Image (tube, rainbow over the protein chains, first blue to last red):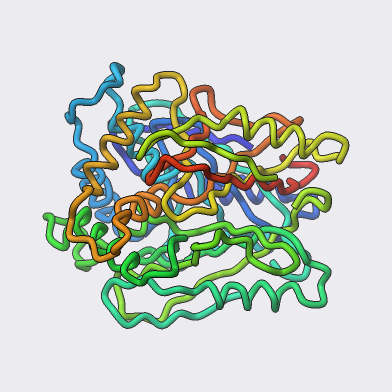
Length: 139
Length: 139
Length: 139
């Protein structure tokens, strides 16, 4: 299943937890898939996905603030498109996350949300959501 | 399966390889699960999990030393709980690792161990361990 | 399946996409594995794997340039082997990636390639490639 994320800023963390939960519910319904693992995969090279706190929005801005310090906008980059910082951030944050689900519900920790990480926006982005079965007796 | 990790420091890497191996052995026994993938998942937003060298403990302290430089304790953070550095480190290190197992044994490299990464301790933490079947002919 | 990667530099990103695709094709053929997930796993502690742009080679050098800034060669490291920067980079980049495949083809984004990340070369390295089945109706 593919979901679409519209980003509005150059760098931005967007909570996609409810969209991923909807994808899990929709994928599972009527197919006997109650338990398993869900892969959230970003098919872009200037964006990523992370799991972090979804209670206080200041956490998102603090993460972006430090990423922008670690990977400066100007640093003698060779890549001529001007978006090298976005590529580096994509590698630091990563292209995918895995979250288990039980009875079609994502097994996130109390404060955890799933965030699409835009590093070269604004753009219209895609996120792939894939399910894998768990062992019947275990997951 | 859920395992518990008690951390004793503000920031700390704790080798949980033997605990994960025990979880794999316990989950697999009597269930016909010999081969597959094991997901190690941290349901917290101020901790993470990484795979690195388990021979020389100085590697752990060097990793923490650099993470503490990259993500300073004071940097004008907005999040008022005072643990923003822990949230940023969690995103840099990541919430999960995947390790294959064969005949119920984790397929780690010679020097690899699995480390719980405490970034806002000391606390009592949880780690989820989930198994997935591999293709019969392949894994 | 295990593939071998020979690295030629101290730090280097090497595009292994075609090798991973070959491993998927070879593993799937004749076994009824058409769709699923492929785990690319690095069993070393001074190397990693990342997904990023495979069009302009300058992206690779920009990623390495920033990693070498973030994790300096000299920083009062305790680990006496002298390769602590490589261990830290391995934790920042990560030991594994997951990519879905359909009809035996890796489902990468348009600009995505899979890169072996050498941080303490040159060496002869191994990469494990493992397949997992997806839900029949979903992946």
